[in-house]
Length: 170
Image (cartoon, rainbow, N blue to C red; front, side, top):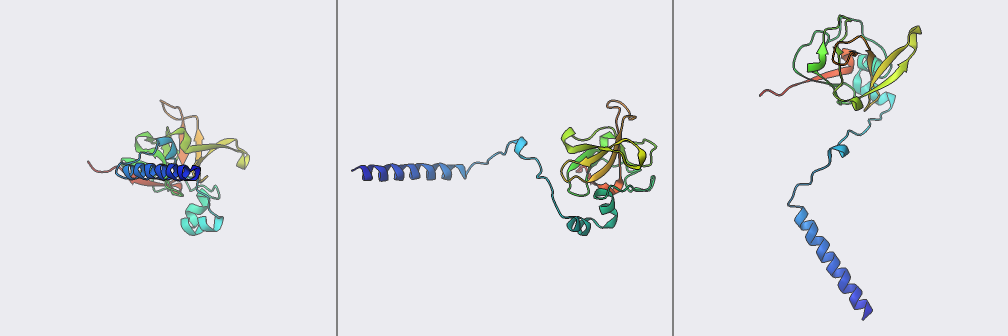
């Protein structure tokens, strides 16, 4: 008798769960925004070199710097979003880009504080704040406190460390 009762309960439980699953297939499931964050990118140095090519690899992975006034995005004024050339993470909006006179693309704000990682840089006998992509640790450039309002920041970025995604035409 006990065995039959357990079987009936299990069958009823399974029938209920299958009917619930069947109903859920017809409805869209919304993933909360806090779970939609990009997964941290991790690759070997050989994989990075193969994927990026030597110029982007030297800047993004070896913390090199392109010569001033030479970068593809230095005098770039299109509307859109600048993304990490290493992983595609959104970093800067064109509405925060400005002409700093430094020779590199400059922005007064990142898209979000969680997009940029700041690291103390004491190379070449200087004390600076290096900026890296928070998603793949790619070297972007440096941030300085001599920027315009409203932030007073100057994110000085290598063109080779970013790509540009234009705004969709209306």
